[in-house]
Every structure is written in structure tokens, then in C-alpha cells.
Image 1 (tube, rainbow, N blue to C red):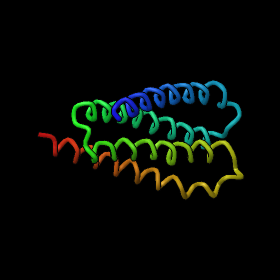
Image 2: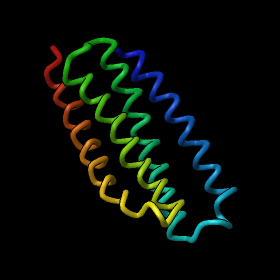
Image 3: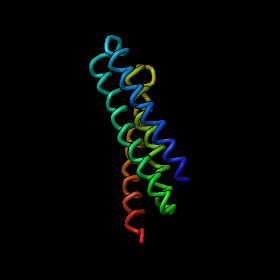
Image 4: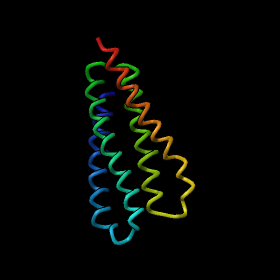
Length: 124
């Protein structure tokens, strides 16, 4: 299980760097300033939670508990829902309805951090 979180964190981090560079160089003349800010927020949170996945993978390698696995799954889901919805919102005006997904992703991030804390607290 820990390899999945570590690999996902590394891949997600690489994607976040690529998307950040793409936005800075390829989208700056295409998107509005507000849309770029929204896109950047998605990249920023994806990168933070990519690091969280790496940490979760390390924790799972020593203590593969259910709360630690839940934290990793919540971080993955949060990246897809939160960052993914922000990418969609910034790139197109026809998918504005997807904005309701963003807070669900944020809740996944919060729950993931709480589960990670709980998992480390329980460790002997």
C-alpha cells in the first residue's frame, strides 16, 4: 500500500510542476488574471498534497494502519476533486456547475490531515 501512495505522490508532484509551468508560460496570454489565479490555486494545493502523499507512504511503510491508508486515499480524492475542479473552472465557462465539487475536495484534504494525525497518534 505504501508504494501506491509514494508513487502517486511523486507522479502528482511531477504533474503539478508541469501544470504550473504550463500555466505560467502557455496560459498567461489565454486566461484572465482571475482564471490564472484559480488555476494556480489548484496547482498549489495539488503540490502540497503530493507531498502529503509521500509522507503518508512513508508512514504506511512503517505502520500500514487503516487510518493511514484512509489518509492517503482522502489526499488522492482531494487532489482529483479540489484541484481537478479548479482546473476545469479556470479553463472553461461551460463547466461552472462543477464548482460545487471544489469544497468536497477541500473536505477530503481536511479529513486526510486529521486521519494522518490520528494514524501517527495511534502509533506505538
